[in-house]
Structures are given as C-alpha cells and as structure tokens.
Length: 235
Image (cartoon, rainbow, N blue to C red; front, side):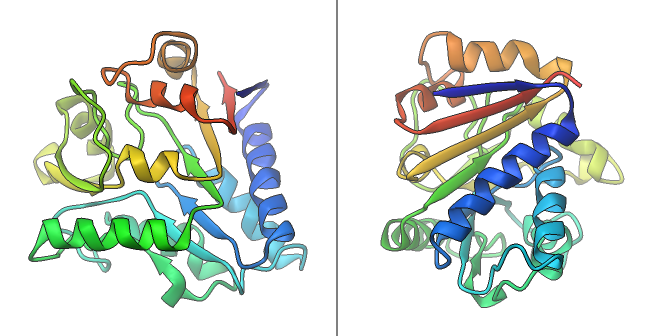
C-alpha cells in the first residue's frame, strides 16, 4: 500500500488526478471505476482542466460507477448519474454511452445487480477511485458481519443517511436504499485509489488501513489488494 499524506485538499486532488491521468495516457481505452461524493469533486475538476488544455483525452475511455440510490432516475439532481454528468462527463470528451451507473429505477433489482457484475468482470477495471465514509464504507458497502462480494441492494445506515442529508431538502427525502458494487468488483480492479480529506476522517482512515481487516470497517479489505494508493489530507 502506498499511503500519501498531503497538506491540503487541492494537493490531494492534483495528485489523484495525476494518477488517473497516467492510467488514461498509458491505456487510452482504459476502464475507469468512478465514485461520487464530495471527496472526488476536486479530482474531477483537475481532470477537466487537463482535458480542456488538450493534455488528456477521454474519447476512448469507458467508466463504471460504484453505486446509485434506489428510486432515483438519472434526471434527478441528487442521483449519481446526474452527479457524474454535472461534475465530469458534461465537461470532457467522453462517450456517455460508455459511462455506466447502476439503474436506480430498475424494476428487477437482482437482475440489474447481476447484469452490472457481468459488465464489471467482462470489461475489467483498470483503476478504481474511492472515497471513504465516516463508518468506513466504500461505495455503499456498509459495516456488516461479512463482506458482500456481488453488486447488491443495500439498506443505508442511519449515519450515511444523515451525512447525505445536506444534499437534500430534508433528511426525509434521502433514499433509504441503494444499489452498490460489491467488494468483489472493487477488489477486481487492477489499481485502487482512495482519497480522504478532513480531520474527521483521520480516525476511520487509521482503522481502515492500519487496523484489523474486518467487515465492520468495510474499507479495511483494501489491505488485501496488491496495488492501493491512499491520499489523505486533514485540511
């Protein structure tokens, strides 16, 4: 594991963008595993800047996202499809037909999950970008008694709902369930890049990467991956 502590969020975002950019430059038709939430927003801004300057070409790349709220379609401004369009896809030359996010409005969730796993393993993920929740979740893989391998429907922890309430008009509007890539999909990525910022993340980052491997701290499974970079800033 490569653990990098930096001075601030801007440096974190710059370093993370450089790592992703290097994957794209080395393999233009790469598959990018992408994440939502506040942590990767700065990274996406840096990637957009590179693209606008002609330094980075997304035209042959494919992307696949970690998760989506159940019940929200891609037009909903709090869906993760909308987030990705707004924070990255609308601003770079990626083919949106090659950008994949779970279908939160799927009528058959088990079938959607199975199809999503099939896509993950068929394409292969070259680099998976992750954030980390205060409870150690990655994607929407919440603390549990065991690690779930497959893409699956998850009931969100109260702490996750509270943390995400700031994006909605009220906490009652936050979806209580979601579809998330499982640990098998995440661990299948050739490279994993996790970004975390803020003093409030210090304790969970220490537990995840320097404590025991346990499904009660979902991100701790990344200790078993052979190519993980963690970039952390307290500021």
